[in-house]
Amino acid sequence: MAYVRKNVRSLTSGERRRFVDALLQLKRRGEYDEFVRMHIDFYTADGEDGLRTAHMAPSFLPWHRRFLLELERALRRVDSSVTVPYWDWTRDRTTTSVPWTKDLLGGNGRRSDRQVMTGPFAYSAGHWTIKEGVTDGRFLTRDLGRAAAPIQLPTKSELKWALDDPVYDAWPWDSTVRKGFRNKLEGWGTGTGSASWHNHNRVHRWVGGAMLGGASVNDPVFWLHHAFLDLQWYRWQRAHRTHRYLPAEPPGIADRQHDRVVGRHEKLPPWSETPDQLEDASRIYRYA
Image (cartoon, rainbow, N blue to C red; front, side):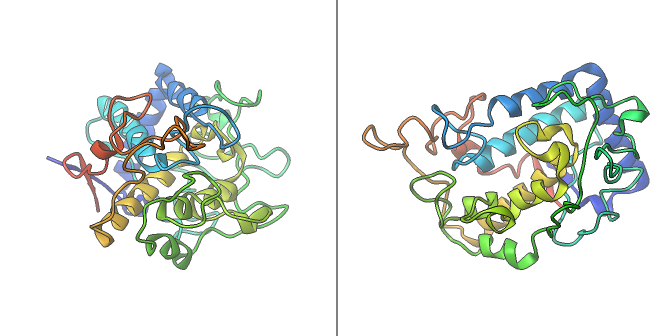
């Protein structure tokens, strides 16, 4: 029977506590840091050689769906009642709304060094030392809303702009493509600064601190953000039932994207599933 992922704002106090406790247990066991390492390892950009699976590619959504499932399975081995909630950033848009509460993820970083000082993931609480990252920092950091150059979270209309595109993705299957649901949701745009960040990317920038770059998993809000993106993929599929993951076939040998993106029926490293197999997770979970 499928379990349910809820909006984080609808969690009871007990559900909040169990979710946090399960995350902290994974951290104590060292399992959580393995997820951080994996995301760093698969954070491959357009300009780098080799296969891209997690970002700047059509497999952005199925890769993160599988990644979320791995984390959720680990959490449920600790507590079978726990599922990953989602954060609807089109609705809960302030620095003090959920999930930035003391009983969930804690709040913003302090002005001097952006260190998070409240909640269960604060370094001072003693449970959340950063061990895997792209810097030597040991504490969780945030800069909600970007104090020095403020930006806003994406709006409902910006999200709808992505959802309304009936085509899943388009050549050249990377961060430069200007049409297709995948990149409109992932959020690579033209120009410089905040104008070039849309949807998924804008949220990472708005949170700031640890959420910037390949080690973004160090901030537990990563999972709530990506659960909401996964929900958008489900909604897009319902709205455009005749459209599926693209490319259906991997790019040919004459294509500059040959061996760089995953076709619908190719295995999605580091797992053995294909995008085709990950398009429907309704037998595993559903959204409330």
